[in-house]
Length: 337
Image (cartoon, rainbow, N blue to C red; front, side, top):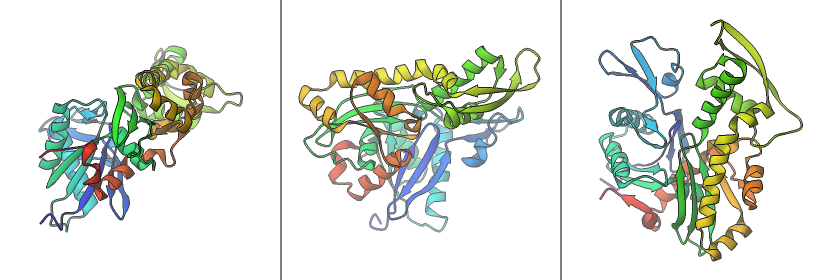
């Protein structure tokens, strides 16, 4: 049976779920959002369909993310979401239960790991393994992690920033801080409220961050008109906001992220620290694509930072490689068995 068992890699993120099918690549990339009826607790929509409902639902429906800061916040709904994504990725004619490999943040507890494994098995997996995100991000970025050489990865997603120094296939020093893309969006919402008396939603805040955001002040600013609700009159209003205002809005959150990177550098053994100076810090994950983030890392740490190619897909690609060479990666993999 196991011989025919398809293999699936799942990047189970706070904001998005990516499913990787060896031989095919990333076959599914959908928001980790579920819409649930408050009347009978029934799951109404999952993924793209559910994300479109955020902030637009009547009282009888709530659309929310069952993953919080990279770990499962709502077990039942996460299980339903995983089942949906596994089925969708494999197609309804698939008869065999898949072997699933799921990513988890570097700082998860063994209980949280077990919850992920159990949710995957209940959602229809024959076997489930969990691997820490920085390891997968490094594999996906094409870093040879089994060498006796220090490599540093900062994986910045929606819920967490995972920073790790990897050598000989294992994590030497790491930290996981719950400051990432979602907190950046929140900071923009708070800034708009304070500066402009304007209430905006999560979606608008994310658009501001992507379209005009930057990690360091720039001389040639981009501008964007933002629509929201005036907190004084209660009526819709449009204001214009520029890049350097966004930099100001994000400063505290970015400082926390940089502190996470500095903390891991401070805990790194000297030999590996010199390797990191030579190799630089590799940035992966969706939120690492914020403009000029490598420059900010360099300013705060003195170590050069590089954005990994296809940074957003690194963890998902890493799951694919780890599945292919499951035995080789057993050392950095925690299995349910």
